[in-house]
Image 1 (spheres, rainbow, N blue to C red):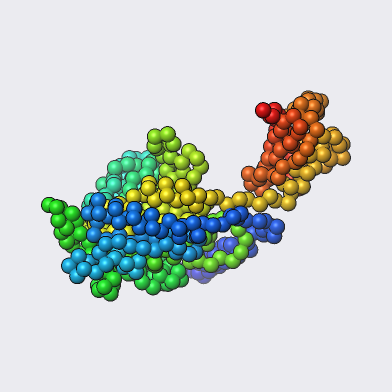
Image 2: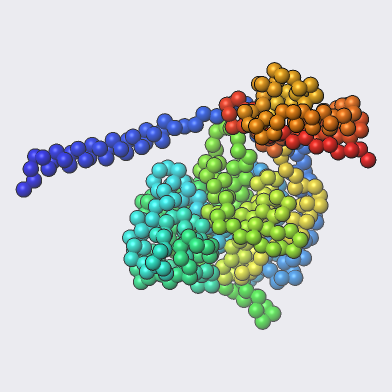
Length: 519
């Protein structure tokens, strides 16, 4: 028999839980950060990207036509995006050989694993709405996962982030996974219930997994209370204006649907057109260059970090989070090594020259697709084709073309107000040793790291070598609190690099001065 005290305890518990929940909500609402109204985002000083890209269209079309012929590709659609504009959209060949229908930029190709970033974006959307945490164990939403047999006793429990980054320990499953596209939800749950085999312990290393993304699709359905595909349509595709993107081949207008082929025995053979199903979240989307360009533009819109209202399905910061590599790997690529990693449904690479790109390919029976975008340049390229497991473009040649025409230029970071102020003060301090400036702009560590006597003796000697100072160059910022400039003297240049402290009124904590004699 339940006593009044028992009911009172239950009531108190419920009140505390309610308070905890509301307190958490209030905390989230009340912690909106303040921000600098003076921040200036990086900009393209002379922006001729779109104009220069339009000029290369004839060369690009020749490259693509040649590539399609040499690789027996029936049809290719491709495009180049600059910021939010599809600057080049073109195609070559046929999307349907039997009906002799040409490939167009509105033709709908299955883009296979390029779907994965849409799945990841939906997970980020649910995370941002407070409905899930990336650290939640997968078993919280897929109870069948609680019964899986891990590879080692010390294995961490698989969480959502493991699935996003392909570090759950599942084996690479491309050949098998591709054929599961149209399977049912029950098949996926039965697969988990029967037990998943592991190739690695979770959180140990990256290994490409279609199964992991199929499970993410199930989580999206479970948490949202609606089919995965419907959630993607309502929360990503429609907000981006992607009204000609599909999941099921039967929904695509006949004259727009690209038919898949393989090249075998010196002839094209039809591949079976797969229907949509539980594994759609790993590779089910069907779209056109014109529609997909809107998605690429949205990813580019995450850069640079800036003030201003959010305009997309998820926050710019969440997009940048998707584009951050996990478990990076160093690849020896000839003369220029490349660091690569997998983010959330996206591959991210950076070469020895500091150039970063984000990309993902897609391949299913009958289709091959790829896209690559460069956040620093605000440029994205993409191509779809209808030949089994085929790279749809001569990527190296396309990139060579873009670089050779001077198109791939980075934004310039404007100088922050405090950095410019400290620069002007340093010019005076270095030349005069002004005591008032010394006390007001130098950090407490400055003369502790190296004595005042030695510092000023060095400055004096370098200035003597340089001779009369003829000019002070424009400051080159590395970021908001670090930069360099030059005092140009009659005998040579005095190069100055300085870094400011994290204090509210940033002071000079590091100052490096070197002399370079004129030739």
